[in-house]
Length: 289
Ligand SMILES: [Ca+2]
Image 1: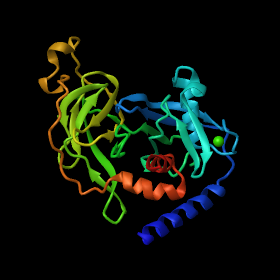
Image 2: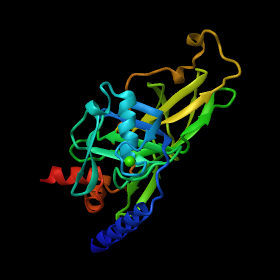
Image 3: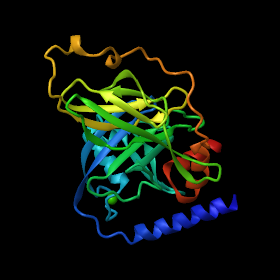
């Protein structure tokens, strides 16, 4: 275990040096922000947010991005729905989308962030979430292989879903997420990812479609992909032409999921971020107290 701590401490030190050396922030940057709540539902879905240095620290950071996202999309703005504070573990989330449970996580470009003070840049994708599992924090972060795509002329798009976890030695690993049920524009379909995490998803609406997924046994942070469908031949009466497989179905999920061999990411979070100051680290500490 000592090695783990030494490794994480080294990473934290490296990161600290890197951020300290960050260049002066640009005036603003457009960042894509996704926020999901404790039910796994999107509240903000890959929305472009103009991020400015609202906290005046001279850098554009996750804190700025989430603050600006709440200003734009939360009723009552950031003052009502968002807060951050500097605690023992650095800049941490106090409130996300009005939730003050303290059970939060956030990723930038599908990489785990160390703290809210992590920098963001033009085009970055920030994904913040409230844990669905508020006791063991077993939620697995997942993402599609692309964040944006075009369908083919028939309206099909092929996406592959990956989950983030840690092996028995706490090394970060990525695994295909099998048996994840695909949703399109918030409607659950009966399309599931295969053993490689891949699904061929038929779309029936021209324009932007929001693709996401969920699994039965383990809560996952909902992935998002915006797929622009330009279907060559689309019926004026889609109700009669939608294949059975794409119609919304009752909320049925498979009873079991494949074993991934993942160590609970919570344990890593509790160990790792306690050292380097992410919001989740603070959660782990608070929950243990
Ligand atoms: Ca800032």
